[in-house]
Image (cartoon, rainbow, N blue to C red; front, top):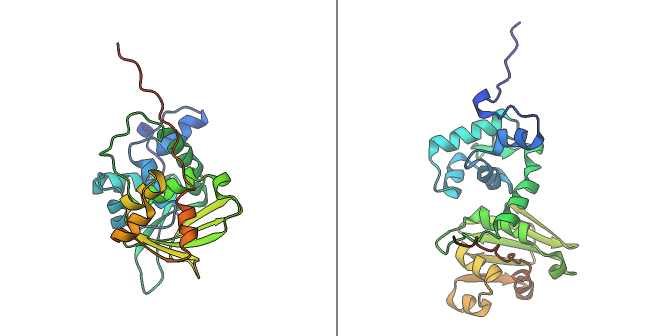
Length: 232
């Protein structure tokens, strides 16, 4: 009886270096790969949803990066049960360990002196950044469960015991509900945007415990930028 051959990463994609750093970069070192992982950290996504979250990637490159992650055991495909029946990509248990890597790169990269005002962030990028930039000391004794509707995508966000948990989907009995867009939420959380003004203009809609929402906006802090290198 023939045995199915296990797919492997092609040699040309490998450094052939036993160092763990090199072994990891064999898998996630190509452009876009770690961002694909970021898009899957909060839960499964369809191919089309991944394209929306990564508007600069082509279908061919996305398919290639997903294949690399599948072959490597970082991600897998599965079919959702009826009535959805959609095929989705999700991280394996080993793939989920990359959350710490994404967070470390995010904290380091947030200090880049080359960030431009024209740079944009997507829905998952913003929600993952909340996990990365969460300040446990600022959270203190806050215990609250939020439903966040961000550009027609729903998330549950829970703050408890100085920790934050974010996941794709609707929470049960949230203390507060937030509906807004990426730019408004980012401005309120990171740029000290005026909460009352956003409510007045309808840029954000809040239900339930308003004070819990206002506290949430103060739990995230971007680090100071690293200095730009001196000119010649």
